[in-house]
Length: 197
Image (cartoon, rainbow, N blue to C red; front, top):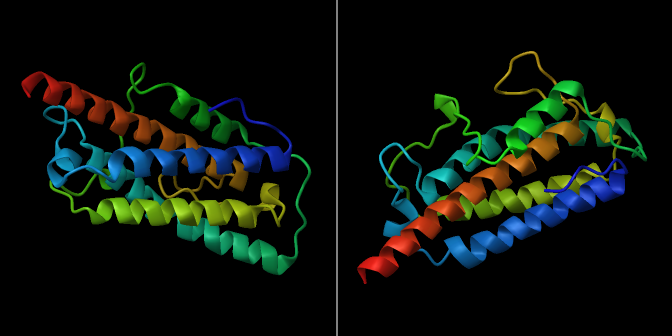
């Protein structure tokens, strides 16, 4: 993901394009997988493609409804879009940490946000696709309000209420990080299959 633009329209356009790119990867690479390919991890304690997506579904299930409620409240207040995006210091640092490739700096997910199982049904893909649709819709809604005035409670860090631009960017960077992880898992599986066939 490139450096974050400061102009609101460009910032939201960038997020929309990133989410569209992720949807294309999911449709092209993950939807055709068999149940076994979806659930086969690269080794003990390492997530499968399905587990990467399940982790994203868990966090999306926490964040997306919060964002939706806060955007609705902002629309009801009649706020107007700001020309420029404002980021908080902590939000910027968290986003920067997520941008470091997992191959260089692995991060440990809190246990309550870890995948729920080892054999996940194909519905994990359907839920993820719906969440990408919802995120795209929320980004569009954000164009109609002053995002800088919208604060979203952080379900992981109590009493931390980052601005909406930070939350949207963190979500997209986090999605990108784990979709990249899932692609590396799939690349490893495909490499192993070609050797054994």
